[in-house]
Picture (cartoon, helix red, strand yellow):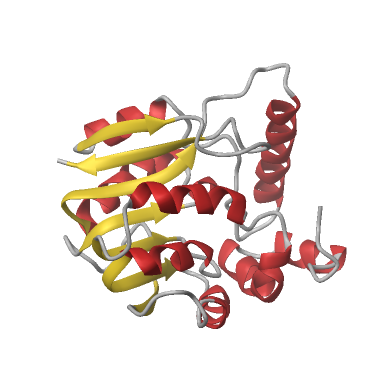
Length: 238
């Protein structure tokens, strides 16, 4: 599950007992050696669906982490690729990891809350991979509003999601078990650590996007096994 260069059990325990922001600050140097980092096997198929090289003016990676998705965005963009995250250490690590990425446009990193980003109608593309579990259900409408706010008309918001897995499936019960543990942890310990599975799922997420002014397209059969149950959502701002 974890690379030998990944975090120790003690380091994971320290993270779990921290706030969300501090937890990712602690995890940042070894984040790419954990299963929490979106795998290249998921990112590579997406790059080919976003457009040819130099076809996008500006793009933003929302909850960019260590910049894995920013690397696939750079060859597609003409002007800039921005990474947004609230963890200072994740941004510092991301700057190092994207330094050798293919392409010439500049990388920018902005530390902020993705529910209150300092942009308005400046991007043609926004992506978010592996981070939707940090958005609580009560904040999902606000999150969609932020995506609409940062994009230009006709801009796209692209992310991966899935439908609720079958109740008898292993994924369902592992996810439910993890979520129950997180709810218990947050009840007993402050500040909270916000990370849950089975969030922003289809079809509810599609309705939120439509209500937020997006036209939505769902592409299935994009991702290889073992990620084949995920779908790619392309939401275009009207």
